Length: 243
Length: 283
Image 1 (cartoon, each protein chain N blue to C red):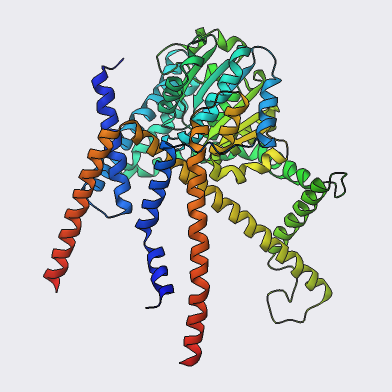
Image 2: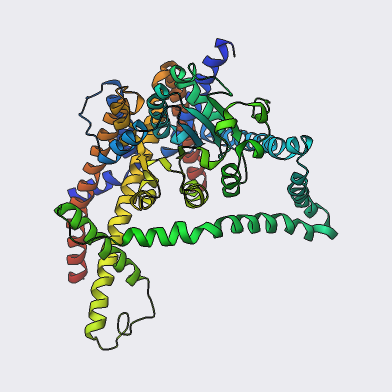
């Protein structure tokens, strides 16, 4: 348990870094750079320690407990350092090759069932239903899936994207393609709206933390304003000097 | 410069939008509006599913989110734990995100009512950050105890009573993936649901909600809680309004501001476009 001083100190640092990082949205300044560099440094140090801890717990500890097979990934992991020895640098390729091979092997076995068959099955929906909303949803789903697939068939029907003469089939193809385009536009719109929702939630999170430490926030804002003012003055001076 | 061009210039100053956004969110956070929150069918489905779980349900929970996403993820996670608590759950927590250990400690700190009633090693365990990504999920599905020999606090997992009943994917009633990215969602579908048919539940940030929805629609997942909105609904369903409910007014206020900006932007854009077309014709 840390003494209360560290809690207060943490709140002040958290508030200051939040405000200084936000200050970039208004004007680049020295305090923003300080916060940014601090973040990168802390993130790098933290990632290193947490990854090292992971190696110990999932690699070294099991070996100590008698699970000898874990020596293999540990050795393959050590191969990464071979790139520092010019003549043997090619050995470093075994690491990524092993990781990619395992990753591919693990995911490929279940991907067809999980990602293709299940999704295709989910698209086979009854187009008639007692509930009109369900019926409409199902019809739209089927049409948009077909339209989306049609849009991405680039070489199937002549006359779609070129000057060739339109046939009834190519016109039908055109209709489906348009349905696909509108469907995707709605999809992208939903994604964009969801992005805004998430970003606003992030902002709410940070502002909630700032409200919890008002004194620290006010001091941080004053310092950020001073830093932005200084940056603005320096910029003006440089512009006058150049002129 | 015409007045339309002046309005366009003002709307183009991004600093004004940021200031307004911060002001709106701050004002509403300090003075909540208590806008009524409707419960979506998808949230109720998740609530009902958890409600129907047997006594002493066994869960695998992946804390795969970073501090920024905590605002959306943590209220949903706490609501889930609070709903589960009366059932005496057995939970294996772990994370495939490097900042997951910090987020788990925050989760514990913000839900003391839950964790004070659960015994470590018996009712719950935290396996810490486990690197390797999809292969990790596959390994944990085949036996978490064997895969992670020691927890981050140095205790041997082999001696923990929880692993006698909740070790492999087939042992769990539900696997919950709390995530801010789509990758783990795909790993769970491929490594937990497809080979073992273990039910999976997703708790995700709003931005990836539309990408996760196909797995819910295809019934590969039992449900999804997406974003602060559904987290707030979940909090209301368990009758413990928390930080998501408190934040939803501010969320609505920010959306109104953005809608006003979009409407104003379009109102200015069309006359300007007409003006530029006329200008081109006369020249």
